[in-house]
Amino acid sequence: MKRIDADNNHLVYSGRIDFRDPKSPVFVYPCTNVRMRFRGDRLKILLRNRHEYWKNFAGILADGKQMKFSLNETGETVLEIPLDEQREEHEVMLFKRQDGCHYFAFQGIWLDENAELLAAPELPGRRIEVFGDSVSAGELSEAVDYTGKEDPQHEGEYSNSWYSYSWTTARLLGAELHDIAQGGMALLDGSGWYHEPDAEGMVSVWDKIEYNPVLGEIVPWDFSKWIPDVVIVALGQNDSHPIDYMAEHPDGPKAQAWKDGYYHFLEKLRKVYPKAQIVCITTLLMHDPAWDRAITEAVDRFRSDNKDEKLTQYLFRRNGCGTPGHLRITEGREMAEELARYLEKLSIRGW
Image (cartoon, one colour):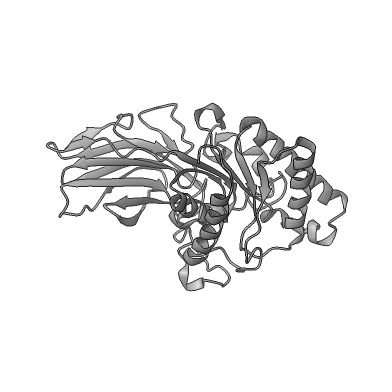
């Protein structure tokens, strides 16, 4: 077999990827992917995993069939991909199923000696970026026996970004997606579930490629590399942990500090994306509506102060009351269809 390096120009990448070593690009965020097209009978993919928690899996879409592969906790894993023997040409996508519970470096592929690597299809012109938590990442989406119920015990095997509302929305709209989503993440540092008791919030992660200090150095993101048309801010779910102060004291000092923090986060987004449509949401996962009212206050104030007509808030039909557990496949689809319809009605630059 012959090796094709990761920097081959026939491979097409999507996502916020660390390309400092172009022959070993690092995949961090859910939905990050690389696509390939080739003539040949065999394909092997080489990955090197960095693990923090849960079991880690890679996602593959090969000739229209989706599958998952278990990864070694550390070191190299070689994936041998089953192909449709009836096809002369094959299309395969490797993607990140999970969030920053692990990173992996894509180190190239092996093809038969007589195989021919072809140019992969170009990415769509529309662009969506999501800043969110586990729901945006598709965590536990495959636990379909628990639809509408509390979550089962798990080790990461049910998490699949392909079924997240984020990626489903992007596919419905024919858009490329950057999914800046991490399970357990709140807006502000010091709350939420991610790396508690020293919890990190989105305010510390939003401008990074690699952000997990357990897995290595912190690497900043260059916002000039990729400019979205639409930015979805899906935060406010995990901020109630460990204390649901917005529900208990919606006009108290902690609540006001959170609203100010949300306002300042919008300021940061607007600075790097001056022309993007920004849409603020929460999800179907149950939460106190006081958080949505707090977002309304921050959004209305920002719109008024800055005369910003390209900032809106959207509430889903079953917002905050759809399920006590994470969104399963059908619930993610429900949310995506509703969000896609809403976005189609907006006047979005370039759409």
